[in-house]
Amino acid sequence: MSDQAAPSVPHDHDHHPPRALLMACAALVVFALLGVSVVRLTGSAHTSDWRPLTVDTLSFRFADGEGGEILALDADTGAVVHTWAPETGGFVRTSLRSLALDRAQNGLGAGPPFSLHLTGNGRFILEDPATGQWVSLDAFGKDNAAEFERLFAEGRAAR
Image (cartoon, rainbow, N blue to C red; front, top):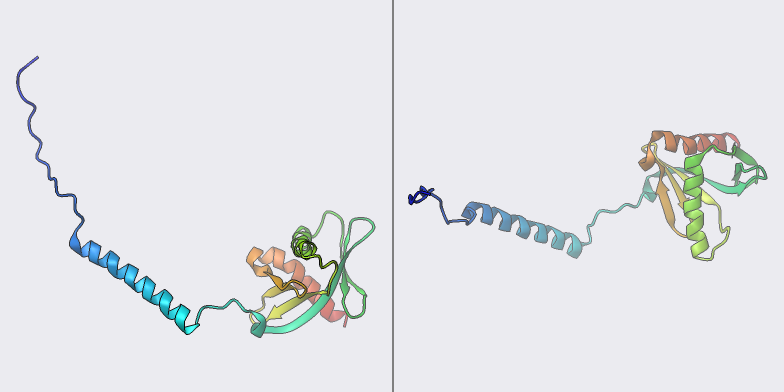
């Protein structure tokens, strides 16, 4: 073993971030707090109320068929507008189960018919007036929304 000391490596003990970076971070925090405060105090928050955008609405009741199919019935006439055979209409089944579960949890039973809304920008909203819950169908992709678009077109034609 040699008695030589290890060569010294120059290093700096100053681990403070640059002052300009700290000032920028502080300004960002202040700006965010001011923005939130202005929105909360003025009440000008973003709204997700799609109702003013609605250009047409059809009402449907849905029923289970004897063979596992789902029947979409015109709420006014009771006429069958569309039938999804067993093992088809997966997105429709899931959407309806979700809304029906909310009704069941609130003890509402069948309740009023569901509303299918068409908005001015061509999107579809499925609403449960009994609970106030709604589903923006386009959020799940064009293929899924197409199932309800077809139902809407058939519902219009049946009138």
